[in-house]
Amino acid sequence: MSTVTITSRPTRITVAAKGTQGPPGPAATATPELLAARDQAVGAATSASQSAISAGAAETGAGQSAASANASASAASGSETAASNSATAAGTAATNAGNSATAAGTSATNAATSATQAAITAAAVPKWWAGTQVAYTALPVKDPTTLYVVTG
Image 1 (cartoon, rainbow, N blue to C red):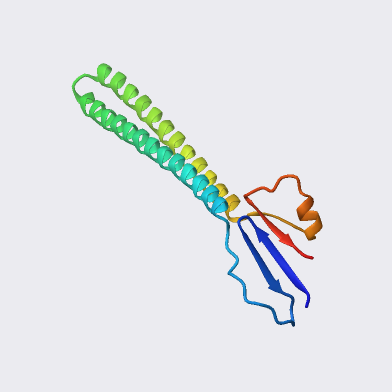
Image 2: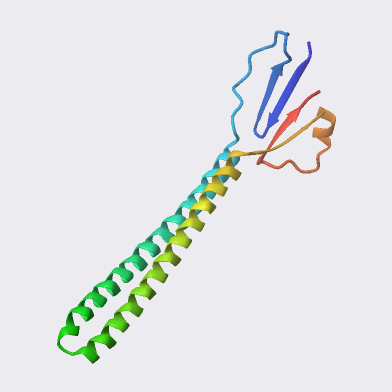
């Protein structure tokens, strides 16, 4: 009977080749090390994304406060034209600064989201190795995050 053996620390699985009968084996699953590494990467990326979102929200609030200051300064222009023009210019500058801060927060959020997506993709594609039993035995170090497929 020809078989393919999948070895993954700590589980070894033997699968019968197509068209042959073989003993049933346990279901192939990711190792605890792979799952832990994936969960850690996703958690770190999610935390970074949430921090960036919080920073963006704070910067958006600053921009809105500046816009309120601009509106108040514009209302005062009916009384003191020279003073109100200065206040309006200052309010406009504050609004522009708030808009820039909001844009920076949005960029940080987008970067964190991209990092989260990359971490999820990287965690979903495990490393693997295929070779004979002799080659597997000869490996000096066996990586616990690698799926080892023994083909003979």
